[in-house]
Image 1 (cartoon, one colour):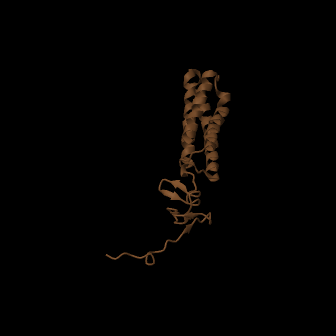
Image 2: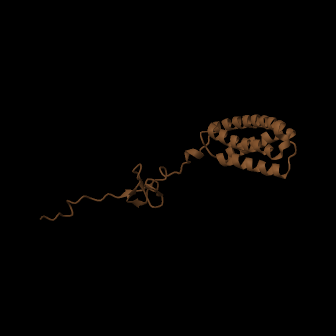
Image 3: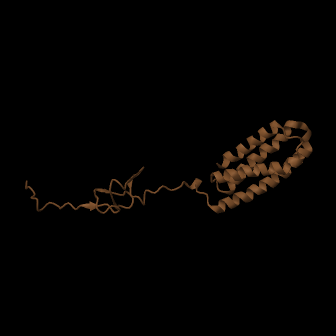
Length: 170
C-alpha cells in the first residue's frame, strides 16, 4: 500500500458566507446551495436555509387578498338584506310564538358564515370575521322594526348567531 503524500492530497478550499464575506463556513443552504454562516442560517424542517430561502410565508388559507374582501362585503350585504327580509316575513307569520322568532336569527348567522366562507374559497381572517358579524347585525337592524320585542333572550340569540358566523371565517 502506498501512502499519499501531502502534495497529492486535495487542497481544502475555504468557503465564506454569502452575507458575511469575512466569516468562514462549511455550511450551505439546503435549497439554493449558497454558503451561509451560523449567524445567517435559519433552521427549517427540511434542513438549514439561507435568509432568502428561509423567509416565512403565509399559509394560503390566511393569505386574503383585497379582491376576496370585496367579494365578502358583497355577499355580506346580500345576506344582511336577504336575511333581514326573511326575518321580517318570519316575524309576520310566527311573531306571536315567542321562541320561534329566534330561528331566523340563527339561520342568518349560519348563512352569513357559510356563504362568505364559500365566496372567498374558505379563506380565514379577522377582517372576514368582522364582515360576517356585520352581515348578521345588518340583518338584525333591518328586521328590528318587525320584531315583537327584543329582550335579553333575543340579544343572547343574536350573540350566538354572530359567534356562529364569525367562527366559520375566523
